[in-house]
Structures are given as C-alpha cells and as structure tokens.
Image (cartoon, rainbow, N blue to C red; front, side, top):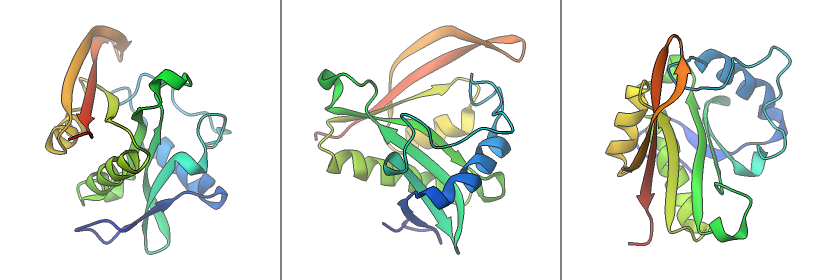
Length: 167
C-alpha cells in the first residue's frame, strides 16, 4: 500500500519495527490523547492483541513515522463484522504532513477488505486534532461517554465514532 498525497509508504509492521514503535508511543503520549498511563521504559509494543499483522505503519525513507492498529473491537464472533482503529500515532516531527490521513485511509481500506460493515474508534474530547481528522475522513458520532476519564485534573469525555463501510 502506498499513501496518496504523501511521501510515506503504508505497509504492515514486522518485528524489526518494535523499537521504533515504542519510541513513537513515548513521543506521542499525553493525557490529552490517552487515558492509559505513560509507557514504561521497558514496554514492548507487540504483545497479546497487538500483533504486527494488525499494525499498519507509515514508512518514510526506511523510517517508521506512524502507525494505526486495527482489529475487532471484541474477541466475540458476534462483533466480527466490525473493525476498530485501536490506536493511531504519528511521530511529532511528521504530524501535519498527511501521515495520519494516510494511515486512516489505509485502515478504512483494510477494514473494507476484511469484510467489515463499520470501522469504529474512540477518541478523547481533549484530542481536537484527531477529532478533526476523523470527521474529515467521514467518521460520525455514535455517542459520548461523558466524564468517562479524569485526566490531568479534569473530567474528559470519550467520543465513540464510526464510519459505515457497507454503502
């Protein structure tokens, strides 16, 4: 896969990308974008439910600069018709260059290829840039979990977004 309008190639991750993906997670962590604690220094990127086969990466001249995790929202067979963007991050030095858009478009294409009827995601109310990106890619609100998290001294809403893929 190659990204349209960017100089990045979108491809599947492999084990050799692990260290760079850990670096991207550390560089992009903020209570404005995730309720998860900061990644530990010894954190591994690939682990159960986070596999290379579900990780699209943006590669610029041989360097991974972003990723999108895609998979089913639950392990239940009943949710197999839905795919979910379970994580998206772009190295701060490459934000605003179209890498995030290319990863979202690749996730949409992959979810469609997997036979999904919907691609869903969750995004914090404090993550305005991501919310704008998803809205511009056709994601619509399916609900808001008001005051779902208490982050950085304030209550933060969790927005549930989705894009229909079945026409």
